[in-house]
Length: 322
Image 1 (tube, rainbow, N blue to C red):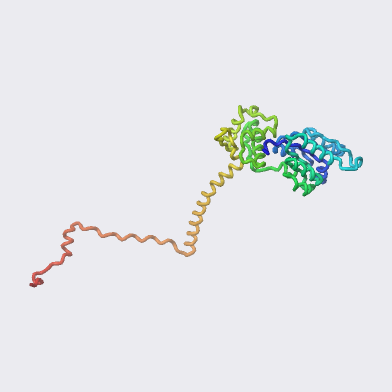
Image 2: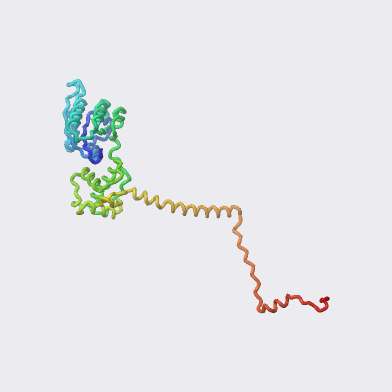
């Protein structure tokens, strides 16, 4: 299954989430959940189940996120956990009736949903779980194909660099969305970041995105401008002749630092060896001996013939014997 073609159906057991938020100062933020899940694919169904008379303070933000609220009677009236039963029935009905929906997200930590997860996986569906760390069952977590803890959502990362404050506001917004989308694709273990894939992710995160609003005729011009600002690095695919993002953010800095590291190590080694040699000489109390001057060669004689006569032995007539 191609991750870019995923169609997601989200089912929220809000009563279980409320139990996880007991004793916490922060409130449940549905936007953090949707921002993370939209990176997985296109969301086509969003439903939340609870007795909303008990959680009326959360209904406004859920309505603004276009989530369908399913009213469940109180446990005292039905005698059973009607929310879990209704959620399972709706999920199985959608799995059989809508074949194009290939990914189901169960926002809960209740182990009662483990049989539902197993059945959806039997039908060839990809199941993602999302819940609170303290209130999530290990059985449900281990049975899902993926599991995301709510506490891990919205954490800042150092992979994306800070944008230049001197850039126009429209450009900074476009670059910020671009870097967020690249980071989302990298989180999904995408090795090749095609320009079309990047644009689709940007439109999922912000459906109103249009490069012409930010002053660019095409999306390629936006990528080229981002490369000029040092935010990313582009390559052209030989077959399709389209752009591919090879590195971005701190990935560029890491490569530059790695290339400069060997040169720094060599210079440090040279300096350290010189320091060690000087320290050894100081410790021995001796300084380097000056080199002895070379002996000068004797000057050649101006009259070589005379010099040869002086050393030639003479023979007297008396010494000659017959």
